[in-house]
Amino acid sequence: LNNRTNETINGQITVIFEGSGAQTIAITMLPSPVLLSLEELSVETADQWQLSPNPAATEVHSSLILKEAVLVRSDGVVVRNYKDTQLLDVSNIPSGLYMIISKGITKKLVVK
Image 1 (cartoon, rainbow, N blue to C red):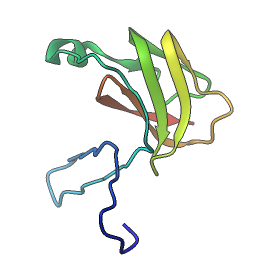
Image 2: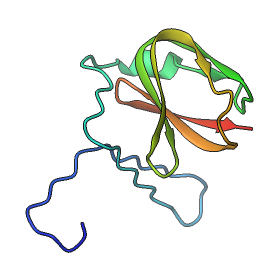
Image 3: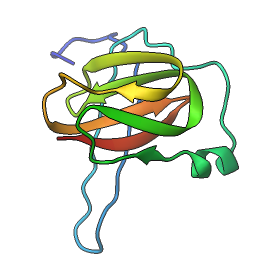
């Protein structure tokens, strides 16, 4: 927080646990304001949400229509915004690990 007091950061914290050994916590702060959605997904709907292909080179198909979604780099920078679509264009995006965030649900995406 740059050694300042009374500073507020708005964003989302994503915690990812993988493997059976030592655990890693990744924290990503999204710039404010980023309106992802005012609606909540049910657990059942979140479990049904799939992205394919993954990894992807030019486009990704979402199993659900995304009212609003963002493509975020691993350092928290929003790369693209999507609205009312199932087809996500990832062409001309550098290779790497990204996150697609919609309605507070995060899915990993590898762009190759």
